[in-house]
Length: 481
Image 1: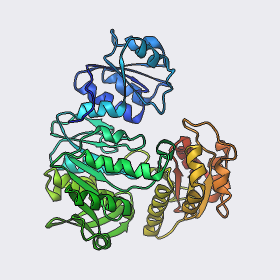
Image 2 (image 1 turned 90 degrees about the vertical axis):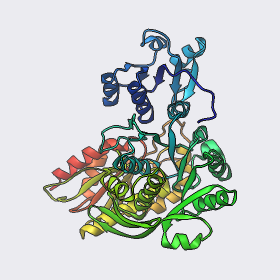
Image 3 (image 1 turned 30 degrees about the horizontal axis):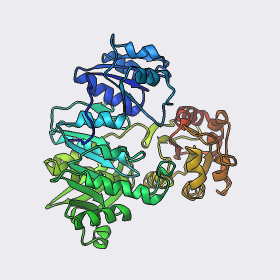
Image 4 (image 1 turned 45 degrees about the vertical axis):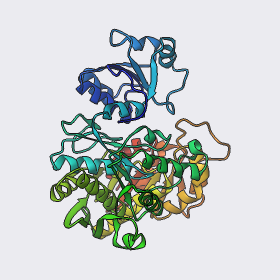
């Protein structure tokens, strides 16, 4: 059980209900028969989906939205990073003495009474969570889950299951993962990020140490031994008497012989359908396929396999569930393959990668895909996310993007930040030989069509609005002659 104060969640109002994280929890509350209301800046398919499920949702933020359910809510949920404190609904909640909590607080409430399988780490949380959902479901565990993206296999980002397990991402960006009490805590990797919140890498690393301290007495830390910081965390937790189930390649296991290892990634083979992995799990051996190619995805799939095994799942069923997982929106998501013209066979793929390590991993996956197909180049359209991240990691972004054959860099997507003088996408583009800086996004589809050729993988990449260019780029490629 979570060690935070309990709240009455019989009538919940969401400020920003259409967001990926918020909407999933709203759906679970609806499934539990609670009164759900909310607001968002714009109408959307997600908002329509929630209304169809019984939620009352307003477009635009107004104080009287708090009465959409007929009476005032018992609690208001918001994102302190995305929603300003002077939002009229938050002001009204304060005036009425209504508790205002974060999404992480509500998630902790929803997991009370369930066993918690939580996926943490700097990179790969959503993909690993989607693999875990597929694994647990195929093994007959019928888990509840909340994912930071829409699962292609289910068309939803959450589910209220009948089983005892609840699977969710544990977000470290604002230390909210410390609100949970995991029975299985997966840590995929640890690399300095979100320094606008933590200030220093040391404080960022510290939050994962504190996360381990939240693991239930009989719970497990599941850690990737191929990541030095995750392996170090596992070694320290093991020395303190904590239960550890490590996973990783044969080489990584040899480098960390004192960390208990439950799964060994024996081999990986890249194919047009994804990466096929052979995994030794305890005294079993299974084969599974990660549809997004690359070692990092095979490791994420292995993490889900270990979590499912610790939860009581049969290895073969777990592996089949992982192999059938169709992925998550904006995680190496295909927008189509061109069927005519000069760019015949080119595929447009959209990805959420917004950190240099993630960018490098996605580009390796794209390279594996074209190599498995036998031809083609990698073309990337990258949009930096946040001025502070661009300022700190410009050189690293340039180094990662240089792995592509053609690079187009957009201007910075500011999200919640004010501009920083001298910081823009050109900083990155200028550090890459032959890269194109394209501050005017309307010109990008034709530019990409002029750079691409047959069989290419064309990536739109970033956490901002770049995803909206995927379909126009696909259309431009189809028209290229």
